[in-house]
Image (cartoon, rainbow, N blue to C red; front, top):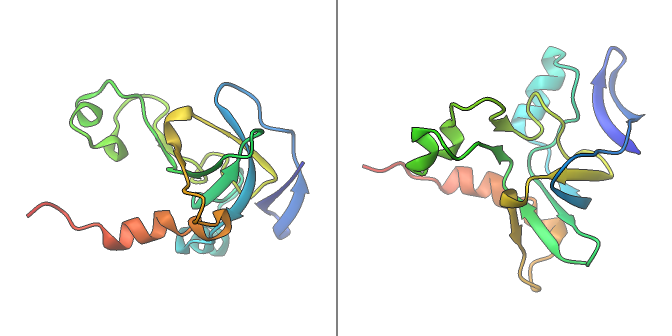
Length: 140
């Protein structure tokens, strides 16, 4: 399958193996290009498929937004609702130092999926993640 990666020759569309493993397989509908992606590209960060702001469609035609945070669910941070601060092995963010969605297909944990309402086009819904970051207001 085709994917976008930073290579020694710059940002390129390359052929990679299809993703495997447990989780939901999605055909990628849309991916945002974040300042993080631009920063990685500018500084030469390589070794994984970019893309953490994305939506996809499963084999049944259901469209999903994918919340890119990967967490274990058992540590104190997870138990208190701060999954982005997970301290367990394997935690992280899809598309940030691990394969993301600038590819034709992605496999993600089921818990990352949020089904989209019919009136929200999957191509627009990749903006949910950056909008949520912009609208987030810490507890005061």
